[in-house]
Every structure is written in C-alpha cells, then in structure tokens.
Image 1: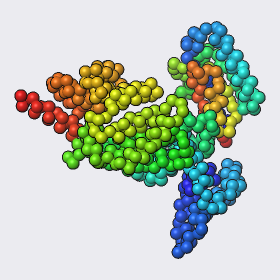
Image 2: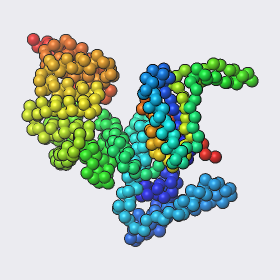
Image 3: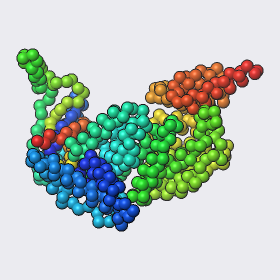
Image 4: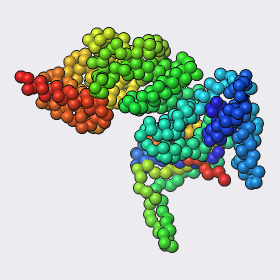
Length: 115
Length: 396
C-alpha cells in the first residue's frame, strides 16, 4: 500500500531552532531519506518552501480566485512529504516515527487511494 | 471462531456472514450427532460459503480486487481440529486489531464489544445511550478505516507490544467504568472482567494485565454494597463490608501481589489495584491503612497524574491527616478548573467542610454537588446529606 507522510511543523518555532541543532536535524533527514531509499520504501519525497511562498487557487461560479497564502491559516504548516510503499499501517507509522521532525511536529499518515 | 474466520477471509463482514450461514447449516446437518471437532467444521463450512459468495460476485465481472481476495482465501486452509492454541492466537489478533490506536477511542470500544464480546449492535448502542443507527454507522466506519488505512490483522511486534497492550487495557477499563457509573449497565462490568481474564489467559505473566484484572475484580467486589435499599449511593467508608464479594477479593488480592512483584516501575493499574486491595483487606474504615493509601496515590500522581487522581489523593489525606490540609489540596485542584463538571469535587469539599464544623459552607458545597450529579443514587445521597446538615442546625 502507498502512504503519503505529510510533515507538519510550526514554522516560527522551527526558525527559532539554533543553527547547530538544525544542522543535526538536517543530517538526520539525510540519513532517514537514505534509509528509506535503501529499503525500497521510498516512492518520492520533497521539502516544500514555506507557507509565505504559498498561493491558493479556487474556482467558484466560473471565476478563478487566486490568493496569497495557504488554504488555511493554521499553527502548523505542511513543510514536506514522503510518499512511501509499506505493507500496512504499522509499518507506515514506524517509518513516520523516524522522520526527524516527528519529535517536535506532527506527521500525518494518509493512505493513497488504490484504483 | 469469528476471529479465525476474519484471519482467513481478511474481512470482518465476510467472516460474520459466513459464520451465520455455517451456523444455519449446522442446525440442519448436525441433527443428533455433532462432529468431533464442531468449531473446525463450522469454520470449514463458513470458509466455503464465503468462497462461493465471492465466486458468484466475480462470475459476471472480473473485479481484480475480489479475485485477489478469493485467491488468498483459497490458499489458506482452515484448522483441522478444535485447537485451543490456534483459536487463542486468532482471538488475540482480533483484540489488538479492534483496539488499534489508528481507530478512535469510541470506535475501539464499540468494535471490541461487538466482535470480541459478541454483543448485538442494539446492545452496544444501549450501553452508550446512542441510537442503534448511530452505533451501526460507527461500526461501519471503523471497519472501513481498518480496510482503507491498512490496519493489519496481527498481534503487534515485540517493540510495540507493551504500548499496544496498554491500549487494550484502557479500552477494557473504559468498558468497565461506563458500567460502573449507572446500574442499568451492570452487565458491561462483567464483559470487561471477561475480557481482562481472556487477555490474562492468552498473555500470562504481564504485570499491567494482572493489575487491571485485579483492579476490576476488587472494584466489582463492592457492587452489592454500593447502593442502599432506598436507592442512594453509599460511600466506601459507610459500606457494609459483609456484602463485599470475598471470592472476588481473594482472586484480586492474589493478582495484585503478582502485578506488584514484577520488576521495573509498577503500571498505573497495578497501583490503583494496590489501593483497592488495602480497602478490600481492611476490616473497617478505621482499621484502613490510610497513610499507605496516601503514599500510593502519590506514586500514582507520578506515573499517571490527573486531576481526578489528585482529588482521590486529597480524600485519602483527609482520612489520614485530617480535613484541614485536605481542603487546601481540594481548593487548589478546583482553582485549576479541570473538574468544573465533576460532582465529586464539591462533594469532597462539602464532606471536609462538614468535618471542620463549617456548616454553611458545607451546605453550599453539597448544593453545588447536587447541581452536577447526573445519576439518581448520587443525588439521593447528597440530598440526604443536605437534609442531615439542615436538621442538625435546627437541633441546636
């Protein structure tokens, strides 16, 4: 089964993390990504630019509305994702728990619709 | 048997239908002589009926999904005989799946009562004061989540086992406490005890499981003494201890010893059971080791802090060291606001104020408790206390 692991963190809190700590988090991401590549679980992954760079699009009554910002102003924002292949939910959550941001943010694990 | 069929067919609904059909077939085929291994027979027939069903569904349209399910079922043979070990393993799988953290708490409780305990949807609905329609929907959504999110039908791996066991125990305790609150749902307490027993049999020697079973037995042992002939609740300290179930107490006490003897820090259920054990083995209120109970609540506050635990600690302090210091503790808890709707908080204050001779404040506190009390037995007790206090004043 495929699962999308969505990484949610508080951008302000993250920006306040001291440089050396952030370096070790980045190194952690490198190691984690390598491990899911090696295990064959990784399908795709990306880090997203911050919500300040987000643009929202809605089409209502034939009119396209483009607005600055994410779809909703929430405390935690989507910062990146990993699309993985896993046997079941337990395996997917075990992988999600190893994502470095899991210790200060939230990882949402959503199954991908199988056709 | 349902648990085994769920494993073989990979579906709660298919398993349930298959089992129903097999039971109907058994009613006809067994006559005077049931087979040597009746459960294996039922499973074999149920499995075949599920296969027939799926074949019919895929006969006209090749659904890849259905064909895959069919192939999987056909590749797994059912049991040849009634092997207790195998049925036990399947039951454990079912329990852990129903209590999986990926399901919401209400869903876990409903699914466990329906599929593990075998209660009808109507009975589960009645136990939680919702309509049958609502409960049916809750069950449908829970099973859908298991399918869609890929919740596995497995006993958890070793690394996850202790936290998953805790999850199962809290579901069982929720089932028990929902019954504890009001008499009409007394039967749920027995379901909870049955579940805890089965878990203890299937996974023997786990201290948290022994602790929970001990706690349930010891709390349930007091049932007959909890409500008096006028239908009013009776506080622990006023209960007629001759009405306590001594057999349950004996079983509970033995389990507490085992649960506390295990190495490492004790589980919260074991500590709560130890407190219940001190009450159960005391011949009277006065002969109860209240100081040790205070100590145990202190331990509980460290491993599982909560405002309710803090309140119970204060009540124990009142018995061990007097109402003065206890009142200060209760006022501190009240100030935090977490127990604003909990009638036992003003009731505890009232009790302490009365012991301190502060009658007017005690009456106010009892009235506040009455406003919050949801169940008749509690209301009657508080009304009686109010009556007693008021008549005591006029007797000056």
